[in-house]
Length: 346
Image 1 (tube, rainbow, N blue to C red):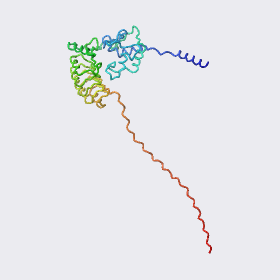
Image 2 (cartoon, rainbow, N blue to C red):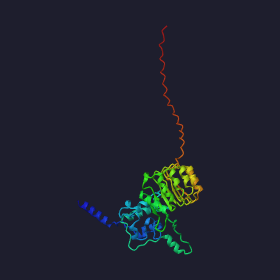
Image 3 (cartoon, rainbow, N blue to C red):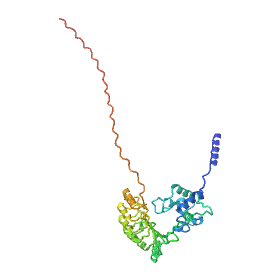
Image 4 (cartoon, helix red, strand yellow):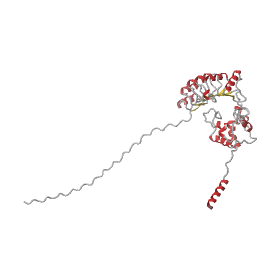
C-alpha cells in the first residue's frame, strides 16, 4: 500500500512539473501569415468582400457576409474553411499563387481554437505597400476601377441578388464584380445567364455545381473582362469552351468534373493570360495537358492526383533444374548355393 501511494505522489509531482503547452504568439506566429497572404486583398485601400484585416477591430467586424472567425471553433470559422481548401478550389484563399502550407494552416487552426487572440494596438502592414514605399522610383500598382456602372448593369445585379445569386463588388474602390451561382446549385437554368451580358464589370464568375450547359456559355461572349471562371461539375463539353475564345484577360479556368477532352482545350490556345487550368476528373489526358501547357507560356495545368505508372510486369523466374535423384541401388540378392543331388547307386 505504501509503495502504491509513493508511486501515485511521484506521478502527480511529475505531472505538475511538466510545462503546459505554450499559447500561440500572435506577433510571432500568426501576424506574418496574415500579412503575407491575406492583407493583399483585405487592406484599407482594397477591402475585398468589405473585409479589412489591418486591425483587430476591423477584423472582428467581418465581411459583408458576417464574421469570419468563431473564437474556439476553427471548423465553424470562414477564415479557416477558406485557407484549408485544396488548390483546385475556386473558393480557396488566397485565390492566386500558392495556397498556405500545412504548418501555416495548422497555425491558423490552433490560433482560432485558442480564442483568436489579437493583442490591442497591433496593426498589420501590407508587405507590398512597404516595398513600394522603400522604392520611390517604382510605380505602385493601381487597382482597376472598372468602367462606369450602367442602368442595365445595375438592374441585372439587382435581379440576380433577388434570385438568390451572390453578386458583389470586389472592393469598395472598384466597380468590378464577382457573381456566384453555386449557392443556387441545380436550380440554375441556362436562360438566367442572359442577365450577365449587360455586365461589363464582371470579372469573377462561378457557375460550379449548376445545371448550365454549352448553350448558356454563348451568353458569356461579351464578358471580355472576365479573369476567373468556374465551370466545375457542370454539363459543359468541348463545344462550350469555344465561346471563351475572346476572353483574353482570363487567368483562371476550372472545368473539374466535366466532359471536357483534349480537343476542347485547343479552344483555349489563344488565351495567353491564362495561368491556372483545373482539369481534374475530366477526359483530358497527360498528353493533352502537356500540349496546351506548351501553347500558353506559364500555364499551370492541374490534373489532380496522378497515380504512378504500374511497374513493368516481371518475367516469371525460370525454374531451376531440379537435381536428379540418384537411384538407390537395391542390395543384390545372394544366390543360394545349389543343393547337390545324391548320386544314384549303380
